[in-house]
Length: 252
Image 1 (cartoon, one colour):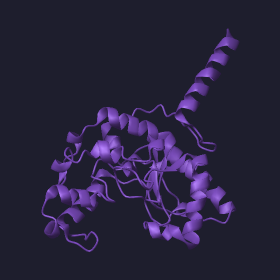
Image 2 (cartoon, helix red, strand yellow; image 1 turned 135 degrees about the vertical axis):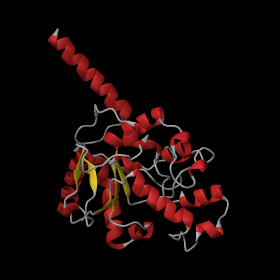
Image 3 (cartoon, helix red, strand yellow; image 1 turned 45 degrees about the vertical axis):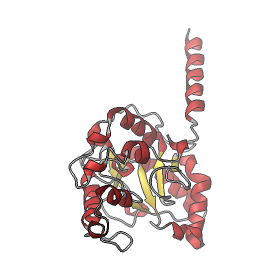
Image 4 (spheres, rainbow, N blue to C red; image 1 turned 90 degrees about the vertical axis):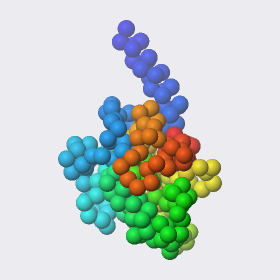
């Protein structure tokens, strides 16, 4: 009977691995048992007090007081060491971002306090739907950002052009060839039909992010986005359908 149960467990694991395309060679805990809540999915948590988060050490980031979920951080540290052994230095420049942090970014662009491509959107784009679409080229609507999950990181630089030559290109090529071994994937690739622009710097830890987006799609609706300027555009712009799910389809 024990032999039967052992063989059965191997068959089940093999089935799951094949269907989920698990390539996480050096990645811990690909099947989290934690049940994610709406507040977690929308970034309404305090990472300093949440036991699932850890502060990123200075070795791995040029920023201060930024956090990741622990398993994502452990996987990143393994990836960092591997890259370093090959002469590549990775640097996290953004990680967990709360709903309220995202709200401050969004509303600064919405009101014109922060220019977008040199424009004051509050004056240049009075139509609220077109204004929201313009912000959505690179900035998520509060509550919909993958950075809320503590699974996603921005690496090295926030300009695609940086990764087209020199050291930036070396970093990007290394990530393309190796990041998947540690569970990290580029979610905002080029030539997608919907969603944000390409982001060569944005990498997601899929062993956690996949179950989180699955839960997001079950629990959330566009009416859940509220409490910030321009929230009334969420349903018409289909934020969940076109932006939360408008990613590299291999990452869904």
